[in-house]
Image (cartoon, rainbow, N blue to C red; front, side):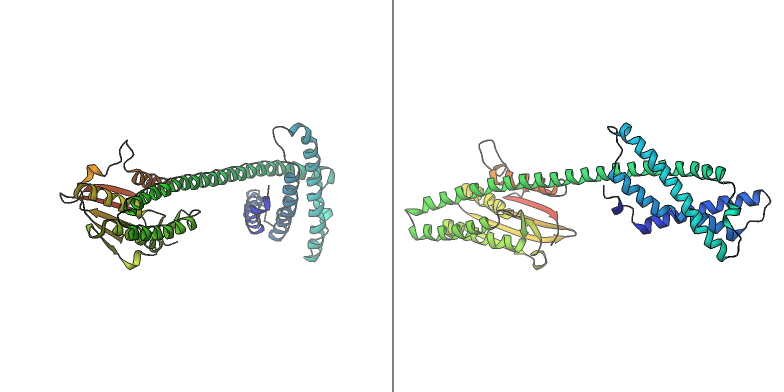
Length: 361
């Protein structure tokens, strides 16, 4: 475990400083409760050296814990090693406190530290009891830190797996959409081939350009609305060559929304659906496509002059594949954070409204 990533020195120093302040508070109030006048300099030197010397030792302990982790499977085998390190930790801390306090006592003319320290046969065990408690608290703290880090790693892995799964589902849906579009367009070419060969030739040219763009986008799930409109323009040209003056498409796209990021092939199924059912019902089609910013949302509407909403709904015989696919892609990409509605448009035709979060990156 990369423990030093989570317990950087500034944080450790701050925690031990807070511990020192509380420790000094206990010592000073204990002196006052015994009606003793606190020796501030003596208490500050003793407590600060005792506390701050723990910092390098804690880093060494955590390094040891990371090299020889303790867990349910190996604790019996590693417990003797941990007890040995506990002993080494305690003796090291006591020795370092003595070594660093001796020059401080001499510097501030406080006398001989070793003479004031007390009987070693009692002082060393006294320090050791405190050090034992501290040592096992550090063992527990490391275990908690390790469990927290493992949980974070698992959450990151789960999040990454979910992201990859979502991407795979989106790519699958997109791959389903492209053959559907290709099949419908080739049907147009087939119907025009014998009646108007020159029209079929132009359709194939635009279709080839659309397929070239689609291949370039096969690893992408999103692009700008501007790029989508360039793709849509070729589709509209194909449809107009097929239906000529029977098709009228009006686009009203405000400039501020053109950089907005949207799913690839989002608009084409909406337009295809509107044209298909309008032409089938009335022999002609008028379609109005708008895009504007509505607060924090990108609002896209597609209205047509067709027979109405019932003819647009996906059915069991395969109608509405592209529209159904689009709804699945929106669900996969935005979850519940989007709106899709299909209503009767003032008594004639259908109005589709789509709202997704507005974003440019």
